[in-house]
Length: 355
Image (cartoon, rainbow, N blue to C red; front, side, top):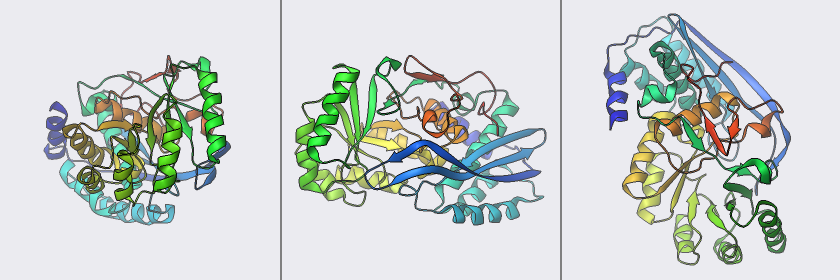
């Protein structure tokens, strides 16, 4: 595809880069209200923003590994960024060399790879005077439909799909909650149930049976990430499509799901699966296997979230994506307003967001 062609022409093109400025800014931002999943309660979001400068252009990215999703810690991100900074300091690099170096220094640290790739594409897209998505793929779409969040968004917000956290109530409360949501949002609205690996196989079968009477788009990670056998078994016991999320960490994990026939939907979090290059591989693989592809944020700040948006647009994703998470972090207006259940990018070059 054009995307691949362009992708390789950047990598192999003669475009020497000298990163003259490299800044890491730590952040910690509270959630508007604590966020509960089946296994964790999150009160704030921590991470680092990075800023690179080359010639007259700057690029930004975000590395914010999320406890329970990412395997790396923030401390490891700091150490690895320090190593990367020392490796590039004062040196000129061709694109290919620079991306190889990112790969070497971000082994097992996907959030850092995502941050560095975002910052470099932000830089290059600004230089080319194109939005980042259009820089990666001239055929990139400029808007995407997104799902709302139960407890955050309301029935008048024009979402066609609402995401619901499940797995931390008893089964009767779960049913009651779904009845309430169906009444609130209306019969036409679909729901995505996110269980964060809360169930064993018998409980997952029972839960899915009870949920089949509702308008369910899919259930996400109903069984713990490492239990592919039971996930594959669950598919035989329910008509609700099964999505994988936590367990989708790289191309190898994607191949494994396909081998075991353990998923109908891949929920890709660029912060977890390592940015533009790795996500592209997973997306290509999913397309050859007719697996649905949804890109979602990991509750990042506007920099990481906007990078996820550009990545989804550059890959011409047609599914409703999970990118409407701006309201959970701060009370400020999200960078890209949601209109009619869709988020669009502006014509501004690069990422369109700065520190």
